[in-house]
Amino acid sequence: MALRVAALEQLLTDKGYCDPDTIDRLVELYETRVGPHHGARVVAEAWSDSAFHEHLLANASQAMSGLGISGMQGENMVVVENTGDVHNVVVCTLCSCYPWPVLGLPPRWYKSEPYRARVVREPRTVLAEMGCHVANDVEIRVWDSSADLRYMVLPRRPAGSDELSREELAGLVTRDGMIGVALV
Image (cartoon, rainbow, N blue to C red):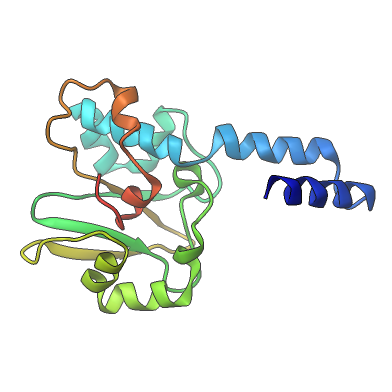
């Protein structure tokens, strides 16, 4: 894959379609300024700081901005919290609206028509097929992202993680957990 990417980059540069400096800036953007590592940091902060936790649930965009996280596709966000009684999952039924600043590039399955259609109709089945088994007595709520409003899931903090640092907690969090298709 790395060789293919390098060959494609060279071809686009040789043909004059893009500038190598532009490619470097885009790579830097996705490595540092957007991505699931930022969402994981938000989750770890919410798990560690009750005031931030409440602020995140009340006004996610503002709370994240306080951590220096904002940008296109993340201007108006809502964070929904998984609890012992409720499991949340996010979808965009129209296309693939997605909070890039905190989750990075959307996975292929998120944009697929089968996921977008089925997770609304049969969320428990779709989650189980993805390896996320939610107990039958837990309510599943499906949140439909749009161009105006994007959602992120605040996963449940794992039992036995009370002594972990924020950095260690962030290491437990995955992009899929923040979409709601995986458990932490």
